[in-house]
Image (cartoon, one colour):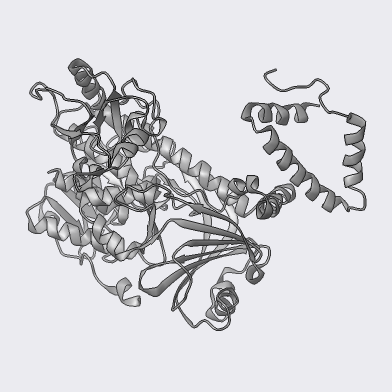
Amino acid sequence: MGKINLKPNITNGDDFYSKLILAHEGLSDEESTEYNSRLILILANQIGDENILNEALEVASRT
Amino acid sequence: MDQIFQDLLYEYQRSPDQDLKELVNHRVLIVGAGPVGLSAAIDLAIQGIEVLVLDESEKVSTGSRAICVSKRTLEISHRLGIGKKMLDKGVIWNLGKVLFDRKKIYEFNLLPEIGHQYPAFINLQQYYVEEYLVSRIRHLQSQGYPVEIRGKNRVEKVTNNIEKVIVDINTPDGKYALSCDWLIACDGPKSTIRSSLGLDFDGKVFEDNFLIADVTMEAEYPAERRFWFDPPFNKGQSALLHKQPDGVWRIDLQLGWNIDKEEEKKEENVIPRLTAMLGGGVEFKLEWVSIYTFQCMRMESFKHGRIIFAGDSAHQVSPFGARGANSGVQDVDNLCWKLKLVLEGKSPESLLESYNYERVLAARENILNSSRSTDFITPKSNISMKFRNAVLELAENHQFARPLVNSGRLSTPSTYDNSALNTYDQMKEPVRSRVGSPCPDLPFEGGYLLNKTGNHFSLITFNYKLKLSLESLPVDLKIINVAEDDSNQEFIHDRFLGAFDRAVYLIRPDQHIAARWSVFKKNLLLEAIKKVIGY
């Protein structure tokens, strides 16, 4: 593997996890998909690096 | 406007060739008198190569066709003698606006730099381009240049032989045949020549339909490309508005894929759509309407023996990005100087392989970009639609998403990386002017640098005093010395020098960079020239 960090790196993992679920509360499946699409783009932009993003796409498909 | 589609530009006339028992041979035969075929004809003629153009009609191409002429095409057209005329008539635009629903979410400027002779784009109807090209050919004929156009000469079959191509032609006076040393097939997406040879045309057909309309109206819209996603007047679809000369506006309305084309084309159905788009108070006249389904296709190889394919016959793209006619003209810009060297015996025929390499590279780039634009404009799956809309929603308020909005990546000339004609890039920067790239323009001696290049090889020196005898070189070379001063310093460093103090650039007849050195040696020049002419 290249540059992607697959070690625990989220500050307050449980906190983020519950916020993520909460963000979807009250949303229909369709609205949830729309929300997730926006979130992925925002986070992808934050990461920025082409190689890491490619690896992330790959890891997500393998798991 | 109908008149322009009626005028005979190259009226059928019986040729002496049709009365002879033996086949008459022409050096180069060009099939198709569209912008690509006519540009090739002028290019070869001005370089002294005898050329005959055949077209099955006698008139301009019908309909609302190519309109966005790119800077690179304007530079080529300048070299061919019609650039200024096109610029004078055309509508200049650099700015593009993208709207989502009713709001503007994104704006892009295609030529943020000054110091170029030509703008990023002009809008000019294809029929004007064809008229100007034919007019230029008539002028060249009056000066004795070896160029001819024959209308109502329909090529039905071609036979590729070792030494010649045999061409079977049908005319109002019956059939006849010709031979030629080389044939350039510029006969469009439904190329008869390509199919008569049984050759492939592979790619993707996009299952979506667009209504293309030309309207004349007095409107206060500025001359900028305006693209709408999901506008109120065409919900769930897209729209495009472009200003053309003569108060003619070009409108593209996405209609979706499951439609009744005949119904949609009827005036009584088109007019309400346009009224909704333009606003109730605007008076307009519908000049042209058609329905267009896009495809992105290309041939595996553009060269087959002595038959060379250029323009839509070789590759087809969806129009988002103006990569159709522009890339076709760039094809023949790439080809003609090579063909001339081969015909003059100065280069081996293998030089023409580089046309295939370089223009397939360009076609792949154009197809990739126009396919991506088409996927963004007409997403093919639910999830694709979700991501597309996510980009549009985010772009409204957040800068980061704006570059992702893809309503068309507008045509730029390709850089021929790794071409066999390239000499090792000694300088490596600036990256934009690396070996294989098109030579940047520059204000120079009251005019522009690019006008001093083209049609021959050029050696441009920047802050370099060269003592060079040109005798032992296999081709004509023109030396252009550029000295840095206050007025051009920034341009020169941005475009040619980077961190270097001085440099020498070898430029091909098609104005692409063949080699560059910060430390120049004559033997390096000789090697570079041999390489670029195919040895």
